[in-house]
Image (cartoon, rainbow, N blue to C red; front, side):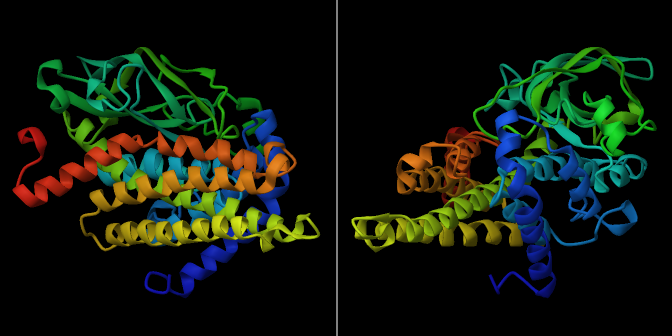
Length: 409
């Protein structure tokens, strides 16, 4: 990684690595079993500045670069994916659209409290009928005097319950197709209001809360169980004109740009899961004895470890190359999809092999690899499924070869 990292990158890596080992690892399994949001560690991560890594100091951020942010996600995920997605969804999906597309007033109003981790944010795009087909948005924003009235719902929204600031999409002109979708800023109180008031993090009385916005039932998920995922419902919710994010009609286009960066984050998270499972496997293989010797002496185990290590090394370069391209202002959409596709499918393979290496113990909660395997699966689905990534990559290649995408797009 010497090509990408300088001394500051290694410092942030070591800081987050120590935090993950000392503060997250001891509680990750218990939190997973309880499906309990990690508010205590969220507060600690906020105190470390992990929620504002890439944002300018004048906006309350750490003023660090994008590679530093990717390192944070990577290192957190080596121990627990739920903590990693809490930072990733908040930073890339919830905060970056405000930084990138918002007005100066919107940035000054929202970004400082988000960068400090004072409140959590989220990104509302997916709907029951608009998953991979994000252009099929049904949530509607009707223009009225002074703003818009929004009705509809979003599903599988990270932080929909615990978060307070959201960027969401709604149709403002059905006849314009994807060019008739606009993004908005909305705010609602955390569902854990008593807990966050006691902790002093997770809520701000100064936010302009939007009446008619509420969180639905918490999802009981296979993986990422410590992360909060719910429906976000809009019922006659009035949003003032000042909360339109970006230009009217540009919401879909801007959110697709946001997802490009989000895929790098999921790539880094997937890489972290794979590395964590690999490290557990190497340790276990050295300690576990069968037939009078450690199982690491058996060629079958050695081949599995070699394949895991090879894939991880390849994913590491793909993820950090995509991040580096973004950081220097070069096109990175295809590279982000490649990194996300490869790393997410690698995470699934490596965690499955890790459980196999652990044998019967791998199928129990005594070792973290079963949790890592459950956490890995969603990486092949969120931020665009593996199938969508293959479409993006293929269309980019064909466009480059022939000057247009399949179907004349």
